[in-house]
Figure 1 (cartoon, rainbow, N blue to C red):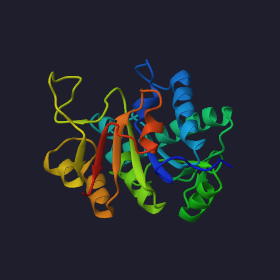
Figure 2: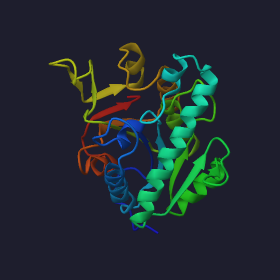
Figure 3: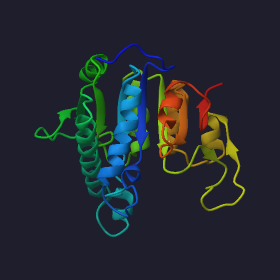
Figure 4: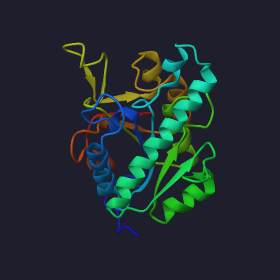
Length: 243
């Protein structure tokens, strides 16, 4: 079991895009970068923080993109869910190599590699010190991994969503990788995500976060110790809250 926490948040939901596992690749999974992510997660686990994780599947398969090429949308989205399971298993393996106890729970039944998602069992695992990776999104087509992250955060009563971005250190009024002089926001309210069309997460996820008054910290996952700083409540990235 982890020791006493020195973090601000007792239970967090970490949201990673599938692209977070790419590292310097253009497709698939970088074992080295996945190990780096596992090491960063271990740092907050060692603080005593209870951690749920949702990972997208965009490094392997995006359902919406595939659907544009003729595959029926619901089928394409299920294919994307399988990509999320692959990513979950990769992260699980790297966490276990560091001695971190992990459980993968899938919203679609794949009994040979993952437990089914059961809310009470997930909370029990968290209380026992396991990192719980929630795979396969919500288990329903037409919903993104952002919505899955917000839903799971609400279900496990997480204190905050830590949204790790790739080489972007917060929320901007435009993509800073494409627009010179884009303005960064240190703080926002939930309704700003919708009103300003900032693209941090999809509208369904943003509306649910606002309804649940779930704070969100958007930060650059590629910065070492950024996740620790976020978990400790230090000023980093962009804080999205209801006040």
